[in-house]
Image (cartoon, rainbow, N blue to C red; front, side, top):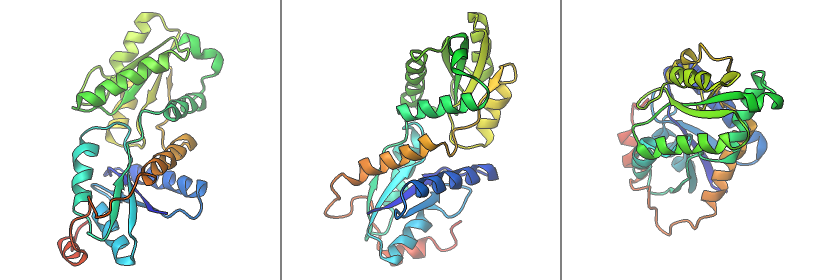
Length: 260
């Protein structure tokens, strides 16, 4: 089977990489025998180019590159394709779809809220802030709003989207709006995969809420979704000639000497 390469953003916050690795371990446990590697776009090692060079040097041929992203914004549309386009020419690479939206993510969000203390009986009287990192990409912002509307129809008192950066409203404003609507309690559900700077901003914005859930992290639903996206990508016909990989291995290795 193709190697699964999970591509994470990376962060200076050590909790980010630790959470990514915990999620990857869960993916491996769900499908023994599948080779799963992790590469980071920034801040952490190994970098995506380093992983691709290593795979090519070992003789791997087929790779599914899976963006560890919840929305299809700049990183999925530009950064990751650019990195993959510079991969060794011997690799046949399929880029999988981003994780969201998916019913599995809604299930993971509800899991985190229940772990934070909410019960099914609380649902109709609880307003939820769906707090995402934020993006300058209108498509990504629209997707978050659509998810909030879909989630509200499952029985919550109300669901409002919020953003830690680049878009409004902020988490604290959405909390106040739900209070004004008359929701008996307010919960904040971070729609983020790993801790870091923006999730911490979400947590600060949740100071007036009754419940703050944990990030999605290595929730079992997220691990299952990674494998679903992998299977969707690997069943697409492989290109006869590499489409994303372009550079000979030797030249690629020289270009990455000293990369971190």
